Image (cartoon, rainbow, N blue to C red; front, side, top):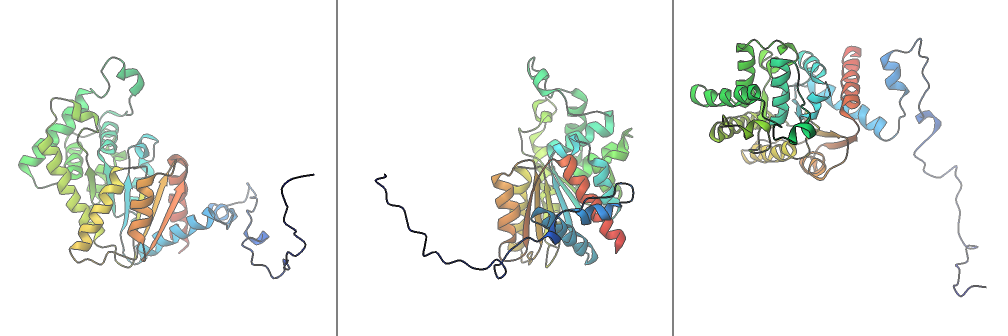
Length: 319
């Protein structure tokens, strides 16, 4: 016996599954591949036509459509993208005419410079933090900080362009895998967006706050100049920047709109290992509200970026 009354279900009305609205059929399922015969396009087709499988295809379509209409495809990125070895794939998309602007936080520019100039990056933070040597690489600090000081005095170029020109001038032995250099050589805007105090080069005596701020501000204006063209098309991708680039993007977008540019009707996509507040709000949702579409993909960059790039090139080749 129980004290609590249970509802009587005998009066529940049922419907036929034949007339019920359903979302999935076997036609949507994944298809096993014949490893000996399958092409990459076969692999794409084999993915489930469900949820993120379809959203990734839709994003690729948006990117290909944007470039066919000569609309911007802007890549925003954090440092981790370089640390996990994706520079060659980004450079390939630059050369392929897919990416029209690269905007990075200043940590990403450090990894790019160190790789281009000395062939290694991503120091052991935990180990070097113990004795206070973390971030104290003299060559890195001198190269970046002094280049920015010189750039502030002698040119009107921004942060990204200045670093690229200095890598070329110093004949960096690995400049072929430098995103900064390749953007500059291909006349594709590359901008660096610094927050003072966040980077290892800010710890050293060569750091000049005025130069860092001025050249980053110049790059903000270059970035707005690209954002203003996101009118009835275009795509903004954010890979691995949880705070800096989502915040910069939101401000750049509002400046463009404030100046009278109808920057609406574009797509945005955030890629990261976990979902976080600012990318969700400032990249995926707010910029595309009422006009456009926002995507959010969760996964490791070293897997997601090569997959996205290969899908883009596969579709471009097919068309």
